[in-house]
Image 1: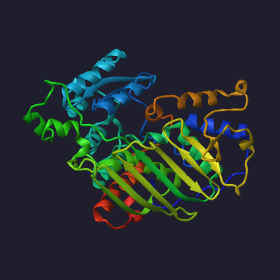
Image 2: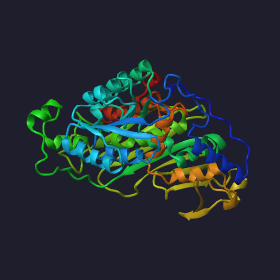
Image 3: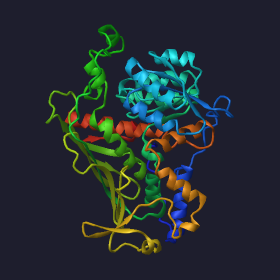
Image 4: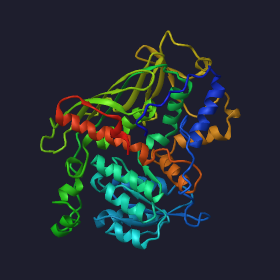
Length: 452
């Protein structure tokens, strides 16, 4: 994401609900960022033998890796050929799932051997954060496109090296901030930056509250021996299984969960923050190196004026769940990956739009709220093909549209919705939040920090 402010589009004249929802469906189906259309990089090209399948390898067969592969096997023209994981239990587990879907995959312990032998077009990386940079850069230099889970890396330097490697190799690097490809979020972004329903945005708020995490165990007899663990940088099976609790391997709650939502704010506001004040600690599980809460206060400065934000991630209570809110002089918008959460609240003095009279409404806390819906028209018989496709996209597994965008970009059909060059700004935002916790004082964030 560029560190320089970008001019916000002027609010467009009011449109009918039919026209507006039809255009929102089109945006959701095409997966092109409103106001930020980019041509697909010429160097991306189509996959080897573009008439055939895209050959994919999975690096990291744990729970997140399996989530990605189950979503990816539903995409036509994608064929898994290999799985790499340092723990045989994980690699066998993932390979068995792939076999059930008709994707017989070779199994490797060392991802470098997989890159050398498997003749792949792309890899999905879902390993602990601390090895993302090493594995991503190796894959890019091996001539392979990469989808890497967030957080990009544990250090700003490693994240910057990932962006540089993608630029130097001409290969695609998509970062797993999947909300950027989510039709509901894309519809919300078009409401905010296309139609300008919030007017000038003044405040943002977000949270991700989850229960106290349980220790991850492992089946009896599946342990790696001490030599194998040491070879891959782990001191014990407990560290391997519960890597998110350790500073060496993870970037803490703000990187694990919070970066998804900080990315939403950076995306919608179109600028990174200029300052952060944060607190964090381990009140509930003091034995963990990373704390169980982080709370941050941020300031963004888009051209329309300062935006103040508060964000929290709690790992001790699930109260309230996870969602984001953007508040402006004309209204506020609440959204979440939870499809039950998506509402627009117009301020009483703000302009009333024609489509509001026909929109679905609910009462929340004594106020009328308009439900955020995708691809809907007034009469079902008049729904367009694109509207139907957008509705179907909104019902897919959460990661599938983001993976579809990645594979379509490999084929040269679209631009990535979250290239590393833009995700870098969110990595900096999350990692500098951890710095602010350690400093116990507000930190100014210079524009140059967000330049890859």
